[in-house]
Image (cartoon, rainbow, N blue to C red; front, side):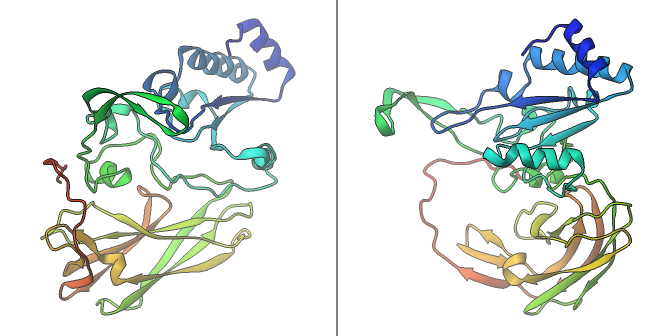
Length: 324
């Protein structure tokens, strides 16, 4: 809502901290819009700027709480905020959960399950969506609802969805997949692989140490970089994640992952099979898809067909998929 500067100044005098909530609705049969949805409205931007200016002038901070079911643009306004809390749409207990995090009763340990792009044009499907109109028919939906004329969308991003695209093509997001802050700090050390040569499986272990002054949990993410001589591959793919126990200051925990053949495999469309390609693999552990802390290599000496399948529902049109 719009708020005049006089009200904002009054609140800046009376309050210890400012909290602005940004909300978005979503539902079945409704695609999101670019303006006033993914992109912030002019009123929202003005409110954030004015509240930030008033509270910062008095040495006070601004928290922006985001209640959405999906991503929004943050790059144009994030520098005005001292903290951004992505609460998603948490339901009836979200107020209690947010209060616990903001008050410090709970140390946040969530990580983003999707990338927040700098701009909609950075999203790999942006140039394809919403596609082209293919008829003037009115399509009847469940419950008698009506939708406009039918359209066809040909998605060309292929395997390059989300962080796989941003990392591989060096497109910097506003906040990357797997990103999340804490009231403490964690150090990653001593990454060990059970073997340098893959046969049946490999275990990867890493030591996580709380080096801050507050107890907290850390989500540890395992990514694999695979050889790409035969099949196009992203620079890395998430293959596992785990959360530590509540670590006290200076306390450590060893986190272990199991890497099996399926973890190494990619789908070969021509062969209709999941295939792990021979070559050098890199196991990477980190705080996010862009904050890798430790890495180690291992080798696969020959191709492994992990699962043989049959191609069904073959596309009826040519798809010019993005290639690296």
